[in-house]
Image (tube, rainbow, N blue to C red; front, side, top):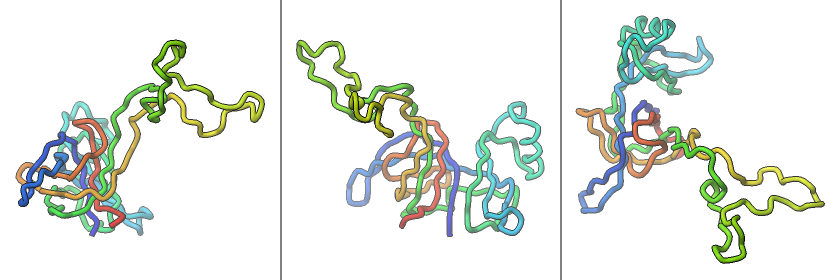
Amino acid sequence: MEKAILGKKVGMTQIFSEKGEAVPVTVVKAGPVTVLQVKTMEKDGYGAVKVAFEDIAAKRVSKPDMGQFKKAGCSPKRYLRELKLDKTDYEPGSEIKCDTFVAGDMVDVTGITKGHGFSGTIKRWNHHRLKMTHGVGPVHREVGSTGANSTPSRKIKGLKGPGHYGHERVTIQNLEIVKVDAARDVLLIRGAIPGPRGSLVTVKSTVKK
């Protein structure tokens, strides 16, 4: 059965296994999320569950969203997302909690990576710099040649250059859930996940086992 939940990245730490090995983990405050709407193949053409996460003041919610919350009988929430699941027998107003996962589950984690703004090719693509010796000139970190002069007289499509780096949707696959703390709504996931601390992430059963 597919499982999915929304959460917030808290940060990274380490725990120790029974063998005494240090295991790097990311702490995720996962759920509880409230089900607002259940979409079915017969009615909507696909199966999904629309959920809401993290309480927020009512004055910060638009009227259309407030109508959804009242219909589901829940308090106003900050985030609204759709989770595509094969199981759609949830009821509006019910909750999905982190204890739907168990230690040992393999998951895919999706988030928005850290934004670095406009960056050069060395930071963005790991290009080499020129020699830091006399005579090179003030171009140690510049791009260098971007194409031939006469043929083809243009830059090659797909050439790596400076530009906007980061702040893109990324999924890291096949991460293991090391521990589930249902009392604190916390998941400990082995390894690193995308995004800065406090960013929204989606934890879902892996598609490649």
